[in-house]
Image (tube, rainbow, N blue to C red; front, side):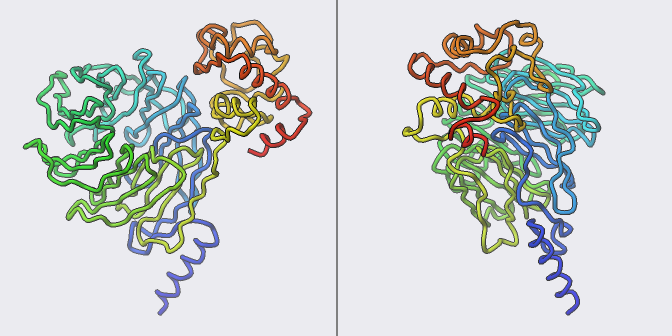
Length: 462
């Protein structure tokens, strides 16, 4: 009886704290928060370490966040800034290091003790989509839009490129190491999965050809099977030796964007553009649970050690946490909809352009909200690159002009590559004079320091 009472007290305490409880004996009864707040833009990926004590997330806001899970809370340990475009993926490399990749074509090695950049390699202008680290933490492999995968040795605080794996006819979207680190698997938009020798970079063979682009994959325990998800919504498990489909799993209605494997290998989860998450038992390939987020795609997905908890990310600025088992009877999805960049065609033309072109990276309030760009509050009359506390690029800090109606109009007419060359602003252009003039007029109203009009007040609530 006392055990029942104690279990009830634990669950009641979690309910009052707003977290998720996992039953005693199941993953050490760890308590999880309901969501992770800290990013200022849509979250691209989420990863957990082997003991579920820390996590890594990447975001459109250019940052990588190291989280600590403690007492039912997700605490930001470091918000790590180093990418000059969206950070797409990150992986732990032991307890003290991590590797991330982004739209800027950069690979960054991080020191997790202080959040500092240890080393950075710029591979070019092509986006890097995914990164995987070998089990011993000594090597990393990256996937790139330049149709290659690159292998790096993690030598202390340095990244040393060892091999470039080429031959794919489309973007490389996913990469994975064999357990001993001797082989590397690559999956591509060309529909194929290949395996390479890590040391020489030589392609050993094409493992499987799906036809449609392969977005994600996971190497399963025992390394005889591999799971993948594709642009046609297919999710399948292939026999690596035979190169044939071993098990066809339930398809998504839209492209498969994420796959997660629990650390013990017992659970596999797929996430799609349709907002669905499905969790499978990897022994019998039984569908255990299914969840639907009606507010958008599942870009990032991670499972706790035994698969009882799923962390998922998409268009929100936060990561949601779903208790897979034991399944809760009531599972509200805490997402604001429509989001700030999803506006109605009936909205004011200038406000509509701000929402679509600017709001993912900028706020209109004194607080920048951890977004990729500086706040636009008070921008008119401000010298370019001078807002205190924002980490501007050196190229922007060297420029010498004021932001006013003309320079802001020029920015959207000619593009940041012309008006602010060398800066990290993404290219956003408006060819229509009417739309450009409406945007400038709206910004002048909404960014006034005193704040005037319903538009300004409405934006400040976001």
